[in-house]
Image (cartoon, rainbow, N blue to C red):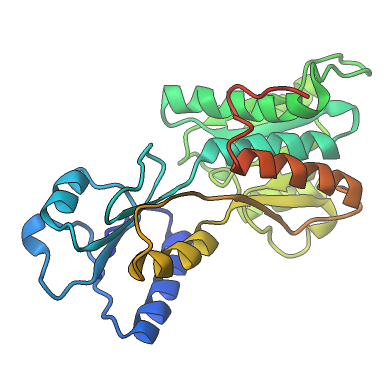
Length: 287
């Protein structure tokens, strides 16, 4: 089994830990590679797990119709034949973050720190975040001064340092007075999170926060990539290949003082629609 991979280190390690445990238990040998050419594939290989869609995926599938293939990707792929696809969509995560964030915010005063590495995707992430909030509060116009349509957003390149992200928050807060901030994975350094907590800012984030900020942390909105791989991989290797599975958004680290049981029920209902494809982050059918 080979695992070509380009992704964030934490997720990479989690995936490797699971694959190592699973392959040993099933009697496979795990071979980790950055790329796989058709000429690399050996007759005794049972399958390949790609954690990024390779450019030669079609050629590999056509040349090896009996080889189990599993791809984890943001690309719009469809499982077929010996290929299973796990699709994760950052727009889903950002939509849920907007919805959860505005539920935790007084006077709808929600802000977001989002990545901007590509113009097209940067715009879509902003749109999904705004749509998530609007799915609950509609126009989301504040009552108290300064009267503003929320949420407000600052987007920076993923590799921006903590000072840059902090300055982006400060600018938003000085202009609009923000009560809740969504901290994307790219913005979420421990230093930034602790600084905002010291300023009594309520946060929704993309990963579990550092210790000591739980009273200011409403919830973590993440993608259950690991859980989905744990389910789909054994099925794929046991003959149930050809499926396409959407990675669900998961919410954890919930502070019930900030997101009550009733509000969480609303979030859970919304996420079910999202996972079933009945709710679209870029064109939601508002209730």
